[in-house]
Picture 1 (tube, one colour):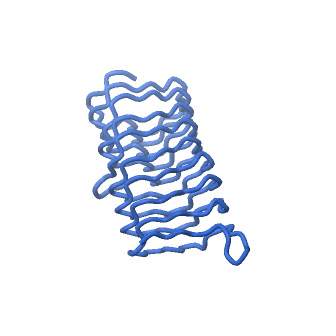
Picture 2: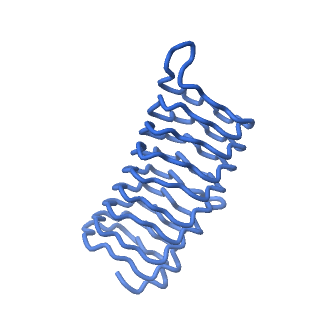
Picture 3: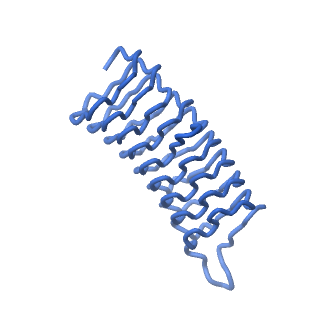
Length: 212
């Protein structure tokens, strides 16, 4: 069912959620969180397999590791401007995730949105203020065709491996780790004029790549 967490309980402000607060809860379908919290803790909604909707309030700055991992019914997440960091595995294995908006996020952790079994349903990605993309962050998003990364400086290992990107403009990227874009078979061009550190096989099996 629907869960609403109030901003006050017995006259006291709710300032934080307990770790694993809804860990492996199969009954929660939607959650409304109070505007008084600044963090969604580690494993808060891990494996809430029937969770379809989450409203993350303005004021939250950090989404913890594994916070929504394996929420396999989650289709969309509204992330407010206040969020600057998304932890490792935060939305990993969210098979039906179709859209996510990350307007002010700076750091995206390891495996934050990856789905190695079935892939997510993300088709495009806008990260206007992100600077760091962790290892495997969006790997296996097989429907992902376009990304906007104007301020990113570092792209981790296999961060976009097994996606379906077509063109890449990476104006500020200085570091590209190993196999970062592995098996993007339809990638035809990639621009990274400031790249100074390029690890092994970053465009491996990108057989249509014509321009670097």
